[in-house]
Image 1 (tube, rainbow, N blue to C red):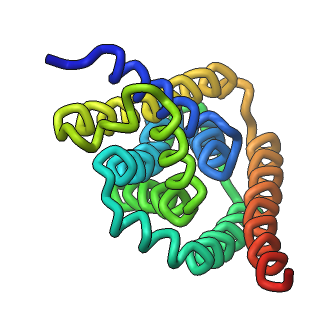
Image 2: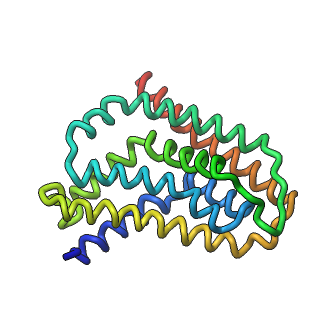
Image 3: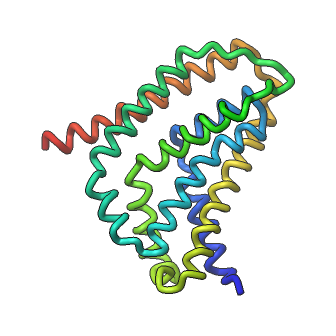
Length: 213
């Protein structure tokens, strides 16, 4: 029988880790405005999958995986920061065209966005450390690893909570899609590109500061 309280905690955690404004949120907003609600929602799927992996590591208490991520934390941050800079520049120089009817997006392009949001999530070791801290501090989650059924419930609930956020965000943003034009879409691209690049620069700056001091 599903533990409703445990599942509710998992959904809340999924919402909490997805909600803070970051690169993935910007990607989902931009793609919703250009391609429509469904595409925006699916764009967040990679992030939800990445959140589920970190939740599994924390819930099942996979010590070796935790130690490995912590050991290569700096490399992950460098890779993530460089990837964000690249993504920011590519977004800045993009020349999107808006149409009222959402343009057809090929499966390959959708898979690429899924991988992009997954990489952005999985290269952020702070996410995993955050999951570990949350699981240790929320009653009922600390011992989830002792029961595979409970651990699986938490992981699925976290993924559901994350997906719920992307569904809500893409749904809300889609309400404003009819007001878009090529000029506004270019502005959205420019602003998103700058902010994504800034996120990357901040990540790399933290690595440099830690190395120097």
